[in-house]
Image (cartoon, rainbow, N blue to C red; front, side):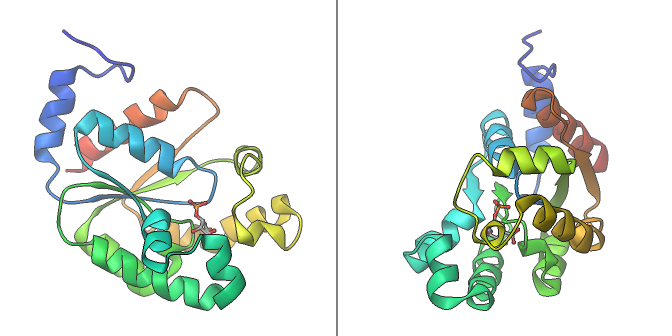
Length: 189
Ligand code: S3P
């Protein structure tokens, strides 16, 4: 049988793809790898991939940093809520959300009702290391990133924990996390 990098056969992945009947939404902290894992999942399942942060930037015609700078976080959150509501149209796709999206009770309820929700988590060292690679996250600029990430991770944990599927992405190869997401979705459906 034809095996790919996840250790799952293409036949198994195709069978799972046929059973996925709604959007798959990845939630969790900045730096857990939601976007890159989402892209890989989408490629394997032959489904479209949407990065919610990119959709917000497109709608606003501004980068996230510019939205925070010019309009403030409250306005960003409002745009985020509207964009995610628009994305919850029942179409099969993989959506990576920004780390704060699922914390909004309205957005969380909508995602839980309409999608297969996967919480990606990682330890603090991993989050610090991964977020240090990009300089585009306004929330990490107001102080020590490790402290901010530690606080946000604790504050947000109860919200993220409402997701029915919970995966911790470790330091190992990303294909292992992708395989675990696929297996957990399969078991949940
Ligand atoms: C945020 C996470 C970011 C982005 C914005 C705010 C957050 O997305 O939406 O900077 O509140 O955690 P990523 O989780 O993709 O970094």
